[in-house]
Length: 294
Image 1 (cartoon, helix red, strand yellow):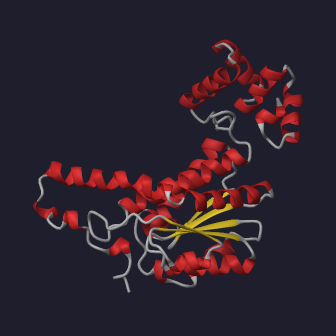
Image 2 (cartoon, one colour):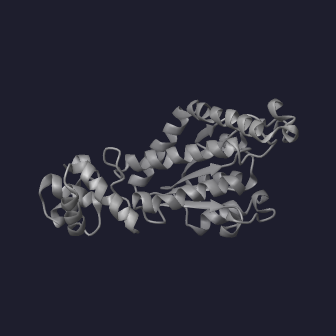
Image 3 (cartoon, one colour):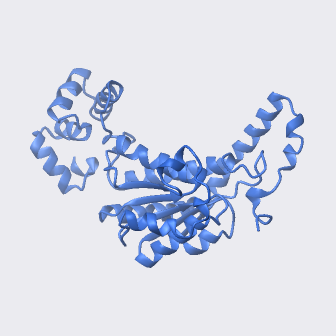
């Protein structure tokens, strides 16, 4: 059943991998990795459709939910946990589900990805609704956990997106938007943590980042909603305010304090010369978009 999957085929360039010198191994890995960006580029129209679906959902209080098994599940989880500190989203706004639960992030849970029950159960546990978007990730495109999850999501009426690395994938046939990044045979046969995993990470980066731009979490190319949870991020927040307003370090520091450590609000206060309360009100009216507010 795996023989027709390009992710499972042998790479002709590496049939003597075990006889190569270290530098030769690294060179061929680098050559193969360079191809990944081009492969992702071929799917940009589909990725754009997925982003538009996510933006519409999140503007209506819907959630972005990644689900996958093994490496694919870990990549979805990685992207989801980065959203709160980067974009100040609630932990429940972007969720990562992995077959076998959180334990599976560091240790494989035997048989979890083959379960047709766990996918729907995990989605029921987080109370999936028609407002949400589920992104099912599976390099092979045939993982039962993801297949069953996407089918359940369709039944609920949620938006569904598939992310695989094989054309004509099983999950692609189920999802409303199919992203199929064909990265070809791996340097190490069947090890989809390599090129396929890199492609999945690149696509998840696009899905979350472009969606956050679409809901007002970005001004210019600045992450104005970031959470200032440590000294480095506090300094980054000040730098963001300086870049957005051309103010001095001292002014940025002053207004960041007045804005209760919210760079976006401080920027509005400086650019429009209003109080904290007025900045908050204007932002709400502009649905969180700094450019619309000013």
